[in-house]
Image (tube, rainbow, N blue to C red; front, side, top):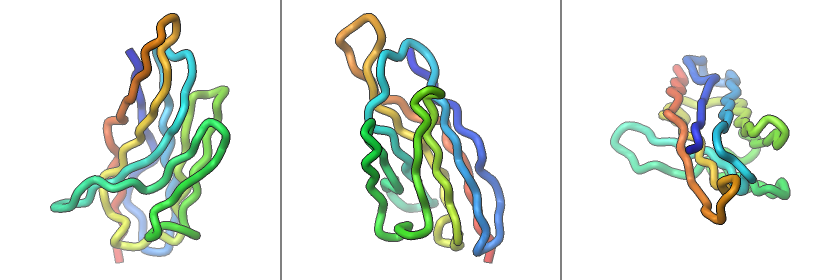
Length: 121
């Protein structure tokens, strides 16, 4: 089993910053793509940012230039640095991690528990 624990959400004024962290633990051999999704009330979950094992990144158009994603492979952790936050960034943010189990040929995809980010105007 693989568990993800998120931290760092909260309430911030427009223009402020927050950093989300997501730590993976459990029977992990290797972590591959790691990413962050978000879901606002009444909307579908959408990809915010992702990062490959090699460090290649991908961002939603709405967050380009404001958000950065990074990972610390030694700590099995992915981060989302969110700057210049806007009220429309308000959502529950979920980390998503893909990888391989240790001792088997099986792969997994795991989700974090969700972190509320609220940006006030």
